[in-house]
Length: 365
Ligand code: NAD
Ligand code: IPM
Ligand code: MN
Image 1 (cartoon, rainbow, N blue to C red):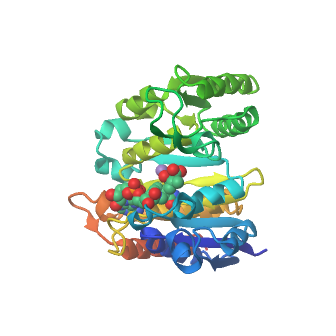
Image 2: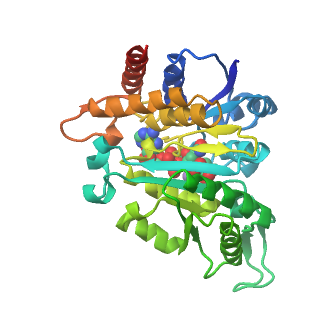
């Protein structure tokens, strides 16, 4: 049966890294039907909107979405609804992609690429589970107004709303506990219950849902402490489970434990198992167009797509083994380069993975 993949490269390095992931998918020789569409700033330029109806409809009609990144400084002065970032937020909202998986794995060969001491990160394997369609990101009301109270009544002010409903917390808590069952059965729920009502509620609901998972150990940690523990003793975490905003921040922090943000893939799933797959990083305007971006986070996201949405676990394994193989062979984009390894660009890294996947297939048949 044909697997329909919506390919949305987006802006900046998005186009460069998605091209490599597509090449890797193509050598698998599986019945994919890929259709590409514009998203983010590229879509704004072409259609006047970062998430055109046609792109959204393509995403909805696909079995999975492979997404690059969106955004550029030049759009920062546009009204918010037209800014590129609204495209990814809109896709998450319209497709109900509430469960975000961001695995932070430190590959053996990259132990030296991290800014942390090797012994702290060797063997690191954390799964960050981030709620993706609630919290202060989507809470209403939000906006600007003249303050009628607070420290400066009469002054201009801006406000957002942090909120979570019980069902929103329950469904993501089930995802976290079920994911933990497939790993070392430990969940750390990260909150700010000591200050925020929303996160006291989060903690209460997570504790209730946990009663259905007596085989899984649960502990709670405040987000400021979690940020500190992630660099002090990251291997103490197994499933790090949190809300939308804390998850955004902590996943970038965790990315550096793996050597580079260019190594951190992600899967964003809805209740139907449909998913959007993207690297955790952005469009990196500072290096866009130079051919130096690390495509591995996107290639590894494509592997997650094969595993979670397309039921092709062997193909996913093949890609992940190929990534390990190219790292073992010494290929490094500048973000993970160290003395004694081979510095390559985006395309050459893609070539190396394509070659390793091809060899892997030959090795099997
Ligand atoms: P960023 O993740 O784009 O870049 C942060 C730093 O990491 C930069 O120095 C960049 O060069 C580096 N980097 C990122 N990906 C890399 C890769 N694959 N290889 C090598 N180096 C890499 O974050 P930012 O600079 O804060 O944001 C840039 C733009 O991206 C903004 O418009 C932001 O809103 C957007 N953004 C989009 C997404 C998304 O599409 N999901 C995610 C994060 C940021
Ligand atoms: C991410 C990004 C997005 C987020 C932005 C671009 C909306 O930082 O996917 O981590 O904050 O979720
Ligand atoms: Mn982010």
